[in-house]
Length: 159
Figure 1: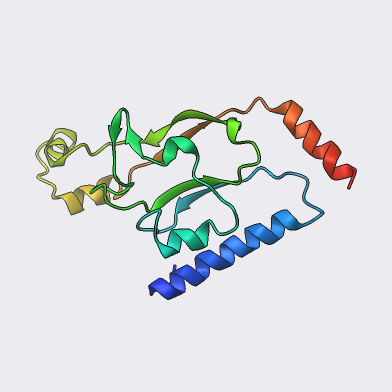
Figure 2: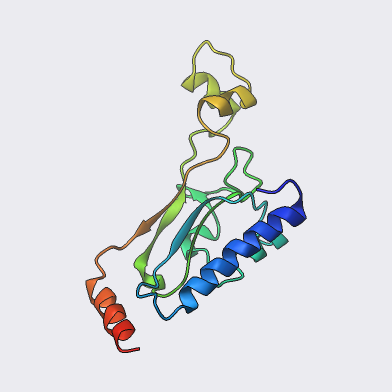
């Protein structure tokens, strides 16, 4: 990613434009798309996130408010204050997502570091080198969608 906010916004906007062009192409048969990764978007309300989703990408409903189990988590980083990691989709068939999704909180709190690594006395930063400085984000997807896929192919061939 770029070194400045403007450079990062430009990269995300170019990625979003590529997605938009791809799905406007008459040669594309499959319009299901899931995009995921560490996009370094601090919040889902900032200009970087807006550039990323400019093509119509959306957050699946279960990931709008990140949760670890039943506990709300503010973000996908260990401090829980930034939404760097995203799973996004073009909402062609939103019902393909279940209502299950969230983050895996392997950190819990600083006291948990000693339980995970007894005798190491890791700081939060040292701990992040052992595991990660971000929580894994997950979503459950329904994959039994043959009827919908066949309709997509038939519609594409009739264009």
